[in-house]
Structures are given as C-alpha cells and as structure tokens.
Image 1 (spheres, protein in one colour):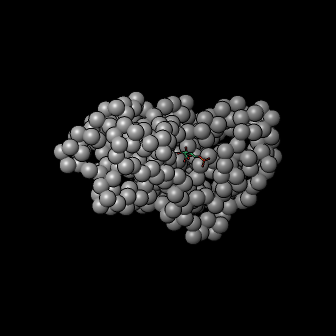
Image 2 (spheres, rainbow, N blue to C red; image 1 turned 135 degrees about the vertical axis):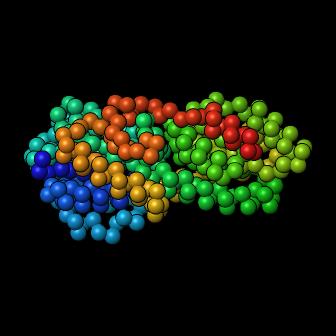
Length: 319
Ligand code: F6P
C-alpha cells in the first residue's frame, strides 16, 4: 500500500478535522502518501483531490466543520456516479479509502468498496451517534454539550417565568441527542422517534404537576419525532398553559470539538490507518466499553440499539 485517500461525507461533525489531521500524520509516519478528497463522494466523482502532507493539516485540531468540505451526494447512488468515482481511484492509484462520516457514509462505502474491490475503512463522525455496534461517534459529545448549554439558558426563563418550553434538537432517525441532553439537562420529558408519544399522558402530568406546584417544564423533541411548534401548540390546546417552541438547528453541528470528540478522533484515526495497512477492509473503527474495536460496515449501518426504556424511566424518576 503506497497511497490512500481520505474524505469526509454527510453532515459535518465537530472533530472531523482532528480526524483528518491524525489520518494524514499517522499515514505519513508509515511513509504512505495521502490524498485529500474534497466535497465527499462528489469530489471523488469530479477528481477534486489534493495531496496532504504533515504541514497541510496544521492548526485544525480545534476547528469544527471539515477542511475537506462535505456534502450529501445523490449522484454517488447511481451506477454512473460510482463508475466515475472508481475511475478516479484507478487513475490516481489509490490503494485504500478512509471515509469519515456517519451512517449514510458507511452505507455508501460498504457498497462502493465491495462493488469495485477497494479497501474502505470508516471513521465514525456524526453528531447523531447513529452507528451501531460502537459506543459513540466523533462529534456527538460536542453537539450534546452545545445543546445542553442552550437548554441550561432556557431553564432560566422557564423557571423565572414559569413556562413550558418545547426544544427541538437534531436527530432525524435517532433520538440519542434528545435523550442524552434531556437527561443531562434535567428536562421533564423527551420525545424521540424510537418511542411512541402519548401526548395525553404528558399533558396530564403537566396539569397534575401544576396543581402540586411544578410550574415550569422543558420537553426535548428529536426532529424526527415531530416539530416543536406543533407539539407546543397541542400542549397549549390540551392544557391551556402558555408554551414556547425553540428549534436549536445547526448550531448543534458547529463549534470547537470537545476533548472527548478530539481524543476519539485521534485514537480512531490511528487505528483506521493501521488497519488499512494490515489489509482490513469494509469495516468501521470504534470504541465499545472503553476498547477500540472494528465493526463490519454491514453491522455498523444497522439501526443502533439504544436502551431507550431504561433511559426514559430514569428521566421520569428524576423529574
Ligand atoms: O448530520 C446529521 C444531521 O445533523 C441530522 O441530525 C439532521 O437531521 C441532518 O443532519 C440535517 O441535515 P442537513 O444539514 O443536510 O439539513
């Protein structure tokens, strides 16, 4: 193996830059040449490549986003797009690919790698923490802390003005951010795609709470489980209490990566490079129970198992 390529795909996540830096520096320490692919799969299709050396990744460990740019690429789901990307891989004599991204990125890497026999290793980076078989993705700790700061601030008004807030966080198909932030933020309830919502029961709790003197509520909703505005309106309709809806949106995706997100990026990137050199392919690296492991892409892209009921029960006990 002489030359590898690295790309970031899907939604950006804080810590992607730390991963790029570590991939480049670990690979060059093994005398590998590293090509940075710009704009994810689109860059592989359109030959947007640049050789990255030790110095070209200086000063990025603390930056959110990705210096390689990223995006979603429907063209890569077509045979024509994949064929063009394969031509690029052949033309530049790329011996292996390191794909930094989330569930969608690994699904694409799994298909592409197997179809064209290109060794692909995934480094999990997504704020959603939706990779199965591993504990946590790069960026999710940062996003949770960002959302938590916002919720702590909202709590001040909720308590002072005795109001109900519905706060929408990211997570189209996965309620991890919502659950984690609701627990850490001491929120009163959480609505996630993996758990059926019982709005009547929630409103009953709100009314009973009000009777016993609990006058402020923060309800976190994952974007995939409903719109904050609609839920707030329904709560007002059913309880007649004033509510406010807030959508945190993309503020959760940006910002300086936390130590946890950076550390994860550095450790996993080293293993990703080493594993490509050892001849591994079609796998993601990750941490499980504190240990670095490798998970087949096929497993990694399955729906992540979360201990929903356990977490939810704890939240309700603590409310
Ligand atoms: O990267 C994951 C994610 O942030 C999801 O939580 C969210 O649903 C989605 O990306 C938003 O994507 P976009 O930035 O393309 O609108």
